[in-house]
Image (cartoon, rainbow, N blue to C red; front, side, top):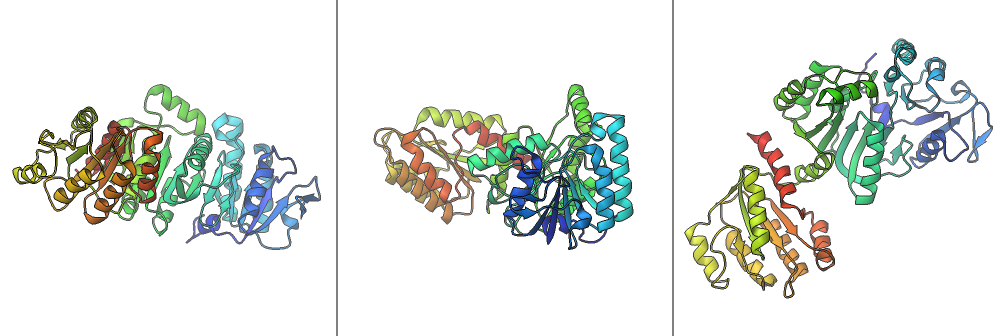
Length: 451
C-alpha cells in the first residue's frame, strides 16, 4: 500500500474533491469546501443533490469530474464511505481524508465498515488519514482540509493529534493567542497513516523545528520508536500522552478503538527515543517556543535579576523546587556590582537591583554579567513600581539577549503598566513568563532530556 512520497499528496495536492460538499453553512461539507477555496488549488464539490455550490459546478460523483484527483476529502456519514471509496478507487485517487466518525470506535458495526474501507484502499493503493478526524492544515500553503474556519499564523511547530475535538480547541486557542504552526494534522482512528509515517515525513520539512504529538494509544510501537529516534536527530519532539490511569485507558479505547497500554512502558519508550513528555496541554505549546529558540540550556545554574525581594524569593523557590541551582555570585562579580548598585543591594543571587531601579541600573548589571560563565541561563524579573521603566528595561534585556550565548528569560509581572514592555519582548523573540514556577517546570523538561 505504501510507496515513496505518497504522503505528499495530502500536503501538495494539485486537485481536490470535497465529497459531501454542502450549500448549508452549518454543515461540515460547506466549511471544508469554503476553506479549500483559499488554497488556490483546483477544488471540486461533489454532491448528487445540487448543481452548484457557491457558484461552483457541483458533480454528482467523483467519477464525473473531468480531471484526475489527487486528494479526496470525504464528509459523508460512515455507512456511505465504502461506496465512496470504491468510486475513488475507480477514479484512481491518490489520497483520502475521511472526516466522519462512526467507525471502529463505536463498536462492531462501525468496525465492519472500517475494515471494508481499509480493504478497498489497500487494493487501490489509496492512502488514508482518518477516519474520525478533523483533517489537516498547512499554514504556508493556506491549505485547510478541516472544518475549522480559520488558519493559524505560520510557525515552526507541527502538531499531530489523535483527537479531533482537542484539535479544534487548540486551533481556536492558537488563533486567539497568535500561536503559529507549520502543519496541523488530526489522524483520528489512523487506519493507515499514523504518527510514525508523519514523523518520518515531517522530519524533512525545513519549515518545522518542533513536532508536538497528542497520543492516546499506539498501534505500531516498533515503527513509532524507530520513527522517533530518526526524527529526534533533526527535530525536537514533545508528547502529551493521555490515558494514564485505568479509567483514562478505557476512555482512550472508546475514543479511537486502540488499547492505551502501560504508562511505564510509554515513559521508557519516550526516554529511549529522546522525546520530551509533558503533563499539560499548555506545557506542550509553551515548551515548543523554548525549543524553537536558537540558544540551548546547557546546565542547571540560573542567575536571577530582580527589582523586588519578594518576587526574587518566589522565583528562587520555583527553580530550586525543580532541581535548579540558584548559583552563588563570584566575589569578583560582587565587587563590580558594588560599584553600580546602592549599598543595600542583596549581595547575592538573586541580584536585587532595589525597588527604585530604573533601566540604567539593570543595564549596568547586565554589562557586568554578560561576559561571565558562572551561570547557564538568566531570568530577569520586573515589577512595575512608580519609578520603574518597563519599556527601557525590556529593550536593555533584548540587547543583552542578543549579545550573549546564554538563554535569557523575562518575568515581567503586572498588567497595563508592563503591556508595552511585554510587546517589546515578544517582538524580539524573548519569552516572558509571569509565573516563575511554570518557567522552571518547562525548563526542567529540557534539562531532563539532556541528562
